[in-house]
Image (cartoon, rainbow, N blue to C red):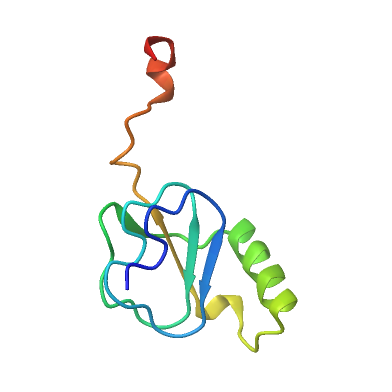
Length: 93
């Protein structure tokens, strides 16, 4: 379980269901899940699937030869509440 734990970047595509603690403490990775999600990890939230995400997912599915449509997926990512860095305070680091 805990797929994409502390994922820094990139994409995770789940063609079926996801288990417990999906995306726990992730940073900038994009998670696309076709099925249901048993539970989300700390700071992971469902996000809107914008046109640029449909384009990314379409490319990934095509390259993998997957028989799935991007519209069947939900996107998850970081709520950005665990970050210590904040761009407005960059001078303080």
